[in-house]
Image (tube, rainbow, N blue to C red):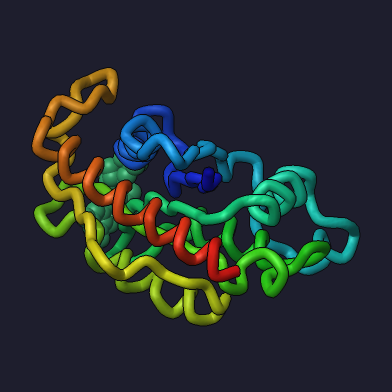
Length: 187
Ligand SMILES: Cc1cc2nc3c(=O)[nH]c(=O)nc-3n(C[C@H](O)[C@H](O)[C@H](O)COP(=O)(O)O)c2cc1C
C-alpha cells in the first residue's frame, strides 16, 4: 500500500486544480491512498523566519512528506509558468529543519494540472522539471495529463462532468501509482 501526498497549487475555494486533485484521490487504485494536504497557511519564504524556527504549516507538511511514498502536484499555470504560491510552498518544504535532501531526494513525484486555455498547463508543467531536478526527485514522465478548457469539464460546484477526463485521470493515476510502488520497492 502506497501513500501519496496530494497538493493543489491554488488556494481559492473554486479551484479547478483542487477539484482535479479530489477526483485523482477518488479514482486512485485500491493499493494506493492519496492524502490531500494543503499549502494554505504557508507564509512567504523569509530566511529570517526560517532562522527563528520554521512555521508550523511547513514542519507539519514536511513530516507528512517524510513518511510518504510519493507526491502528486496539481499545478495551475500563471503567466506560462509555476504560480508563485506553489513554488514558495515547495521552497519552504525544501528548507530546514528537515531539509530538502531528506524529504525530496528520490521521492517519486507526479504532476498534472488544469487551466481554461487549450494548452492545459503545459508551460507550467515544463517549468516544474528543473525544480524536480534541483531536488533530485524521481519525476513520473511515463504519461502526461494536461487538462485544457477546464471550465467545460466541471460544474459550478466543481463536480467533474466530463467522463472522458475521468477515464484519462483514472488511467494516469493507475500508471503513476504503479510507478510509485515500483520506486518504493527499489528503496
Ligand atoms: C496571474 C494569472 C496568470 C495566468 N496565466 C495563465 C497562463 O499563462 N496560462 C493559462 O493557461 N492560464 C493562466 N491563468 C488562468 C488560470 O489558469 C486560471 O485562473 C485557473 O482557473 C487557475 O487555477 P484554479 O482554478 O485551480 O485556481 C492565469 C491566471 C492568473 C490569475
